[in-house]
Image (cartoon, rainbow, N blue to C red; front, side):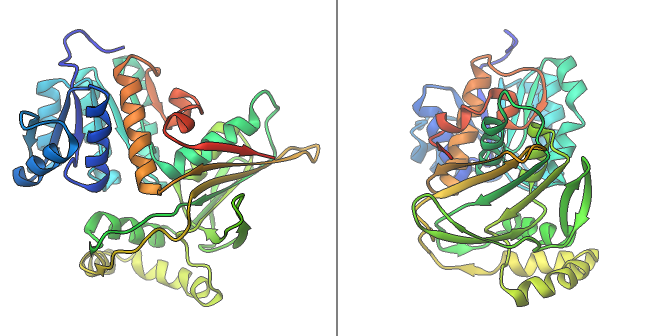
Length: 362
């Protein structure tokens, strides 16, 4: 799949961040030529030293998304991993640059705004011979991989519910604009679900769950507009699909005020203010709340047959880095298929286990 005019390089955008640095380290350990891309040279130099890429690692310092796109078009990397966040804004121009260069694109988007913006590029990507993979992280892959395994060699199910139950350890620092923006975007969008195959509005915080995990721990979750919803519907074809996430507030009071908060945050001025304030919030270092992260799915067929499955991973962010790195490595080796996909759709549900996850089925 990779054009002989390519450098063979894998570019990691946002390489100085936690996930970008982990992706760089994993790829460098496999012998790939990795290029660290970001806005600050000092941070990239430090990331290069920490990643094992070496003092001579190639660094590209860019000031904006447009600059990144221009450099991709000019230098023609084989694969670009977008770990800079704000995927609703950055994914399209960077993915288009990859297509112009005849290369491949990977991001970790997990929301219902960013994913469709990559999917609409499917025909253009196929014509360019490029593979665009969006959602290459814990939530989307864990959901769609379990659903794909449960539905293999079976007719189209009637209903699917997926639960994204991430467990992440936090380092001390500020929340940051990318994470703050993702929270605000989720609240302002409101809930979503599939009914009769159509994406419809649902109550934010609906369908609260209190789940007992296979390892005996428990976790609460509730409905939110997560990318897992779209991934599960695409892989199953089910008419009715719902999603819950452990990131959503589950108390009765919080769920009662969520719709009002969403309406307020849909006002652009309020949204910008909220992002600025939340981005500056200081976060204490905390261990992950549970031993494992879990992707969970319950699939029901018209005849009443019901199947349940889980994917166990460790820290959700670490697993996301592993998924992104494995996806990039496979694309660099010529695997995948031209077009725009979620990770399991592009490379198969075994991607989830290759990245370190474990399936558990009823």
